[in-house]
Length: 278
Ligand SMILES: [Zn+2]
Image 1 (cartoon, helix red, strand yellow):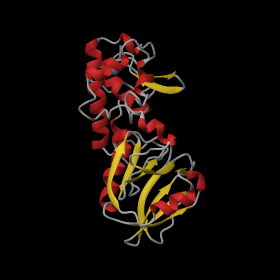
Image 2: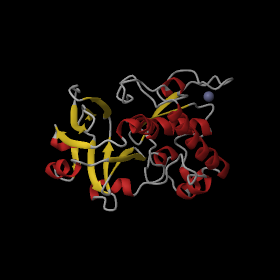
Image 3: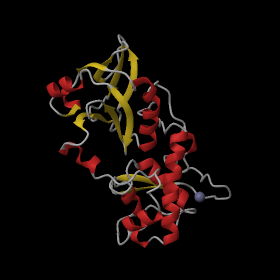
Image 4: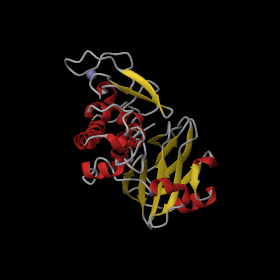
């Protein structure tokens, strides 16, 4: 599933292709991909809208339109966005936005789990309640040791689970939570409220750093190839992963002879080095 660095990479790549363009009309290939409003309302509402900017909130891509509207895209497991030629066909295409320059903005999603929403900026529907209750962006300055410490205090849940809670650290998923815990030297199963102050500080910094690095390397494209850049290329952070997906392999930290272990926590696979992480 694309996490913050993947969606941010997509945003940066799409921005020059979309900003300033006008959506002529939308072709909805699968009605269930429209999360809000009705399909008819969606098609009517988006026609003629100009793209003013591209933003991101957690794992959501937000296309800012004129007249106070936003097109919100949630990629979920395998959503893919690209700008293609007007006559170019796209496999698994669910919605296609015809643009005023003869090209098209296409949303493909083999699993049909992803959604698009057309909303008024000041009036988000209940379907996007999860987006409204999101915590701060972990790559921004307001996500610091004091904030994270306050959110973890008194909690008996494994710290890994809390990092996946979008109300605490939005945009973080399985890959970057494992990598952040490795960098901070903390075992994923530790009770969140039992972390020492110095550990919380290390964790807040590690989260910011690992997400920033993920963006720098254009995200993580795993063997399933689900995440791709809009031009079809792959990200390269997968070559730099320390623990995620490396079960049974030697720890990458110099001088450590630990072997990466995998464990199920709350239904999710978690990877860690038993030597480096305490
Ligand atoms: Zn190690």
